[in-house]
Length: 294
Ligand code: G1P
Image 1 (spheres, rainbow, N blue to C red):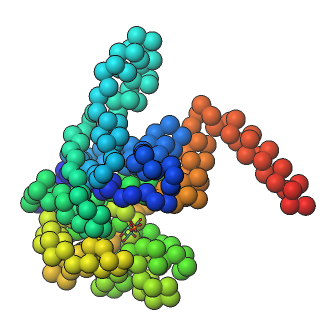
Image 2 (image 1 turned 90 degrees about the vertical axis):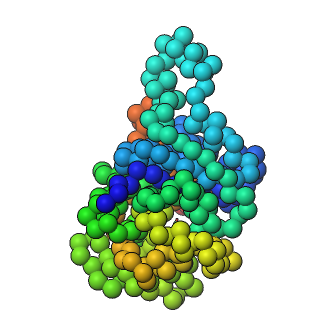
Image 3 (image 1 turned 90 degrees about the horizontal axis):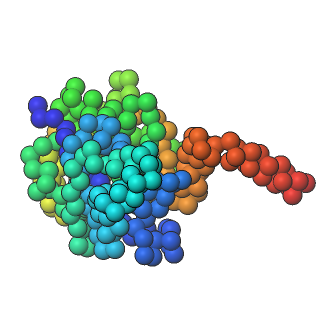
């Protein structure tokens, strides 16, 4: 069985939810405290044993490439000033090979993944979506790779969401479960409200066998008129087993404003440099708000 060594990170989305901040800056570069969101994703891939990453970019995304490139002037400056801790942070991603390809038209997530087919070739691979950051004891992608290593089958990361949110996600229709693993009869992309077959939602982490490209290459459109990865996964599931895995960990939705702000607060509260001051500030704020409500 071939090992999972490659990962695709789709990053071609327009980021309209964060306009005007994303007018001239890719949404993947929006910082959470002091790191761009995409760095959290790349670090999860590295911590999961991924050796090669391909980022699918689009128009106006050049800042992502600059971010993961070396910056010799900056490095020299940090060395001169003895800021070696910062130097280490700046060069984090040099531990992995990062490649880029452009999605030339915004045709959907399935199409973005398909754009990386030649890079992946005939190997199993991981997909990590930038809108979901997962904090877990064992990195989320590693959990899925461990499952793949047991079964040799594709496996999709899921978590439970409230009823009223199912229409925002890909949802699975489970047949049976063993531990955290589900056998699935159907993968449905963004079911209409009230029609979801379960509360188990696809959370932006996938390990897929290369046969998925046979179905993606059909270029069939689905929900929202886009080529959906979930639809190709369902087709794959009809010809070879695709499992769902209820991964352990806290998932943050940084693809929408409130999720982004909550993530920022949580990450800031874990940051030794600013934690105490922020905590005091939040307490003060809560007191002030109580007074206003009265
Ligand atoms: C994508 C997938 C969807 C998944 C979601 C997770 O949707 O198509 O199946 O549940 O990511 O964040 P998007 O949020 O890009 O519309």
